Length: 370
Image (cartoon, rainbow, N blue to C red):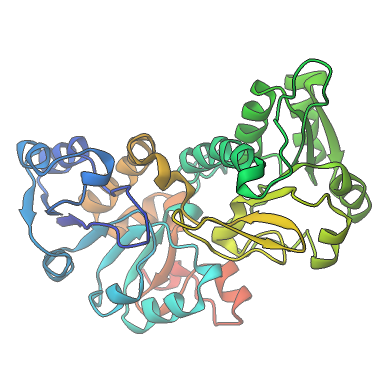
């Protein structure tokens, strides 16, 4: 199979879909690998490293899209890439289709085989390709939130850990999964007071067992959320519904009960956000203010630490990519129920139930197509 990766074109996205080490593995399995010149520069990876690993360097993204059977990316294809996608081409990347109806339609119209990192599941039901970036985003959410709380950034002028004789900041984390757990570890490390809200009692019990009196746990309900919001200096939106849109838990009217200059970092922005006033922003202009509340809505947070993120991501994506390349997507999906769940669009059909339901589109069971 001909495998390719391109330079990401999303604003301030510096990650890359393949490392030189990945190239070596694909080549050792008998595949050809094509890399757009400069694709790895944002992650401190040079063309020379890719060449030494066995890749063929090509000048333009158009060259990659034209020749490759599978394109391995990091972020979803953007509008300039729509016309480059070909019928039958495997696109292996984060897609987050529930936040992008137009991309869903284009993938179907062009009859691509779209495999979404974020809906592949492992044998235990986990999300192995989402986990590494969720961990990075969770840790980053505290870093950027602490920065946004500084007065020159428009925040309340609060130090997360406080100092002797001064109150610590209060961090409210909505969602106790991978993102939320990574965030609370960072927040605890900086000395903040941490509250975690989740709708899964078993998960709250686990977090309470592990972190004890370092955190306070609350069951997710409107009453509990409304009780916690007025006291929070920093709110982390860490809600996830795999393949589906995030629920809007923080309403516009809730902002009025919050402290002026407090901060919302909505890590769920890729899936539409868990706050009604969330909108996508970029690293060069990451925040905006609504009703006195600072909002941070960068949809590709891990891109800010691109070297770390690229290696963490590709460590996870490689085995599934090799399986697809070695067996072909259809045979690979038949052999691995978790990989089958990653196929969101196939030959013009929407094969992810959550995406089809959200957009009121027709859902087709992939098993009936392959």
